Image (cartoon, rainbow, N blue to C red; front, side):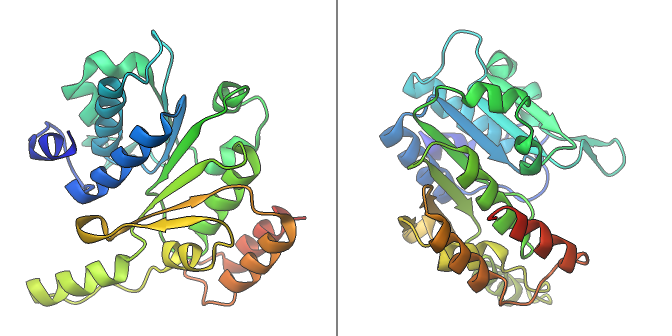
Length: 249
């Protein structure tokens, strides 16, 4: 299923794409958990959104004309207005649009509002699956995880892309003979120190991981302290630290 999708040359693809191995990992969780609703953070062209919607259709996870996938991206366009967030879905899978809610200029922090449409959709859901491929710089993945741990049903799974981002970048820089980008270890820190259940991908899925929500407050505080002991990679680091602390008060 995921290999067939990976071979498609969908119109409008741009930016970093999920690999067949990434999608195999996501598909395995979707098949095992059979979520009633999914969340996605980091959309870019919408290649991953389209893949999730196609897999959900084939697994029979949809309800008639009810959004199944709720996706969030901090921007609406790239390169001015040349490229639109999520355009792969609209151009290649218009029949899936009724099962998709796309929220641009929004992040996981939008879900702290009780009246957000996605928060309302989450009410009564027992099986929820989230996929994060958003800002990788530390501590932004930590923010995403803490918010989702707060609002998702206990025992929900959060899938993380790029848990071994630097390994991937170093391999690419050697292979292509280019300078390796500056480190972005936010996802790695979260995956390493999460105090609850977690799974790491193997083989072609080496860059994917999953953590389960429901950690208690004492463990969360230790988790946050461990993550914040690493160098901050964003400009407004002190403000972000204060916000993070507020999420576990």
